[in-house]
Length: 235
Image (cartoon, rainbow, N blue to C red; front, side, top):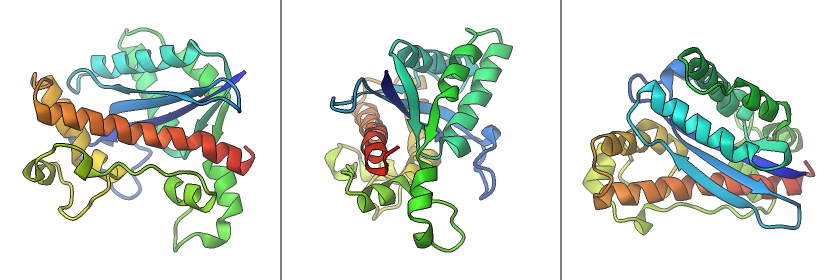
């Protein structure tokens, strides 16, 4: 049996979460689902990134969930890897799956539960190994930091590699001197900018093609690291 990996990208277009709100789905909307699959430990993983294809209406969340779960269930796997999935990814996915089913969309609870039953959150073995390095009040390290400590390749997504106007990036709340894409950039501005541009029919514009490419590259790099980290941690 193979191994799946999952990472979601979200936006907060209506209300920003506070420091204790990251498990409260009312502050978040689904922008993308990054997925990976490795049939065996000695094979290269297959990866894909599924982007939202409409505005913030629930029907587009349901459609993205359906595509993501179908991708996973089409592959034989006995593990699903995340990093902090117990505290974020699976929490919100569960909420959206329940909302979609209650609204009469394709029932997804059963296949989602099968995936959740084989979930392995790499945050836990990483925290056990590096507990003595936790800074301040942090309860776990970032994925990138643990990967660097474990010698796992960390691919940075850099703004200079994409044809995006600096004024557009500032309007999407990207700090002017930040050269590397971070999750907070997606959550605070880039994710919403992409979805709202696509919903407005701007998908043929260079800016939105490049932004879509950036989001795919960033999300794919996160999910690809999970396989290397699982190997390094013996998980």
